[in-house]
Length: 213
Image (cartoon, rainbow, N blue to C red; front, side):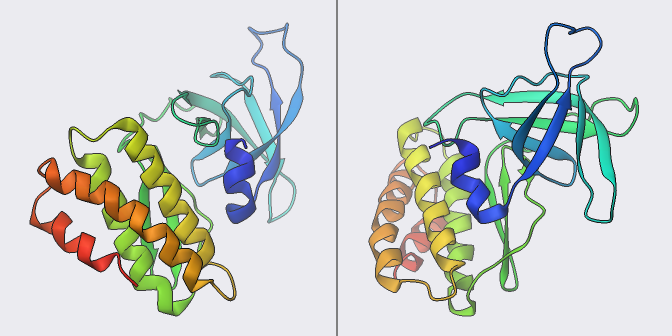
């Protein structure tokens, strides 16, 4: 399963037309599925896109949105469903915006959840069921703790990320399956326990106890 297949079902995708920069005449104009965000667009890792390319997609207000790729970051690590290209875009000839805050972030705002991948915030607000908002908030803080703790195996971090996303996806359903969520939480608790053992501190220990439904 690709990155777009995994996250597109939850956050929605747009068809983005990519016109190669003038210095790349050998590449053809092509259209790809992508996650369109406030200041960036995420593609599958094998998408042929480079700095200077022109991007176009349907503007919900009408017409077309046209921007230039100002910075292209390739995240080619972990399973295929996590590998992707994040393209920072700018209107006209604006200078590229430096990437900041690498890592994954899950932020709960009321009964909505936003997710960031490698510093790129998904702008669509995804509603979660009220009774699971607190749990999703704990899941987000647990994932952040795991990623910020030195000494955690990369495979464990990947498992934690996939598990966190699975919990969120279940929590966004009209009728979340409590049994499914209960089956997922021990995996996340296990990785968080590894973070505690690696020196994550008392806050991480408290999160372990909160990852129980």
